Image (cartoon, rainbow, N blue to C red):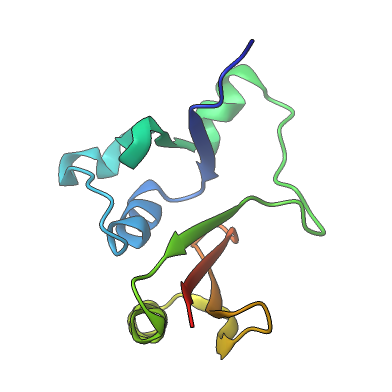
Amino acid sequence: MPRFESIGLIVQDMKKSLDFYRQFGIEIAPEMDSEDHVEAQLPGGMRLMWDTVEVIHSFNPDWRPPSGGGRVGLNFLCENPAEVDAAYNRMIAIGAHSVKAPWDAFWGQRYAVIEDPDGNEVSLFAAL
């Protein structure tokens, strides 16, 4: 039976994407900024991988970015509601696009949504 073990993102600008995810504590060596394929080990054994559009086109020349939705969403658990606000504000200050400012969601979490440089939604949340 296949086992889920990694998430792959297709990116326009490797350095810009890696810099974005470094803000969440994902350790990626600076020398990886100019690579076409990058992998980072995540807690629990998962990997997050980035590939440039050029790499994808090398084996799938017809690939096009999705339109009208259908992008991946990544979620980051924060320690508390204040950390949700702080992380959101830090990311907006460095140029992340806000999808939804922090709010107290009806399901019992402080919740916010931003976009990474390639338009993937990134949620920040903590229990209220």
